[in-house]
Length: 118
Image (cartoon, rainbow, N blue to C red; front, side, top):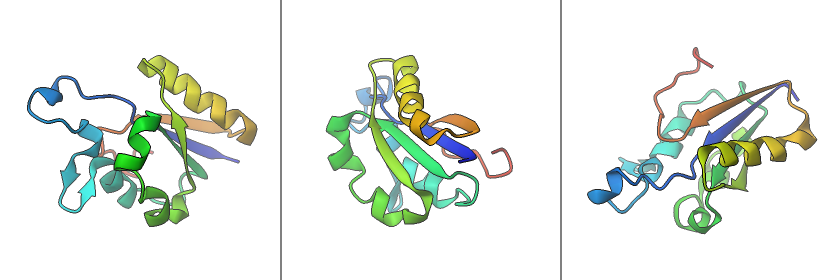
């Protein structure tokens, strides 16, 4: 395996929650939430596997259709930690068995990074 992407989506968006109960990575933009928007613009040839690190309590509420909608991206879900560092470690630990040559860790709430950057 060459390239893997870890999307950190375990945050609760505390600063935004004052006006909105939805974590910012799951806020809808049109018909898609921010993660779906990012995935729909991501070239499927860049990454062999995408690991979305998310609190397991939020998976069914916010991501139930992502695997079906983005089959070509080979998406897996991993439970987040209580800090960004622990969530990153959980994603990396999961990827060990795939032995990727390169891993990119990206924040789910930053959907405007483009394919040229990656």
